[in-house]
Image: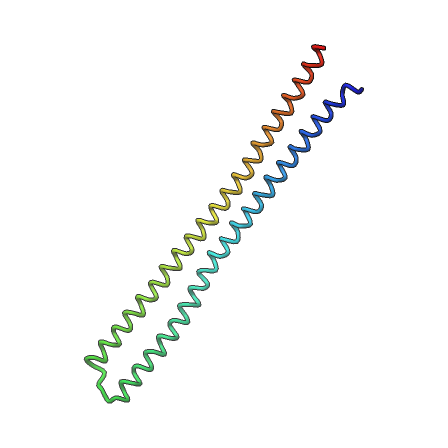
Length: 155
C-alpha cells in the first residue's frame, strides 16, 4: 500500500491544480464579461445623454432666438437685412452644433462598444489560457506518473 502513496500525492496535486486553473479561468472570464457589460451599458447611456443634451441645447437656442427677436424689436430695426442674416447664421450654427453633438456621441458609443468587444475577447483568452494550463497540468501529471511507474519497474 505504501508504494501507492506517491502516485496518490502526484495525482491528487495534479487534480487540485487542474481544478484551481479551471476556477481561475472562469473567474477571469467572468471579470472580463462584467467589464464588457459595463461598457455596453455606458454605450447605451451615451444615447440617453445625447437626447438630454440636445433637449437642453434646443431650449437654450430657443431662448437665444427669443432674446434676439426681442432685442431687434426693441431697437426698432426691421426683421430684414442684418437681422435676418443674424437669425440665419444662428440657425445654421445651431444645426452644426447639433450635428457635432450627434457625431461625438456616435464616436463615443462606437468606442465603448469596441471596448466591450475587447473585454469579451479578453475573457475568452483568459478561459482558453486556463484550459491550456489545465492541459499542461494533465500532461505533466501523466508524465510524472508514467516516469514514476517506469522507475518502480526498473528496481
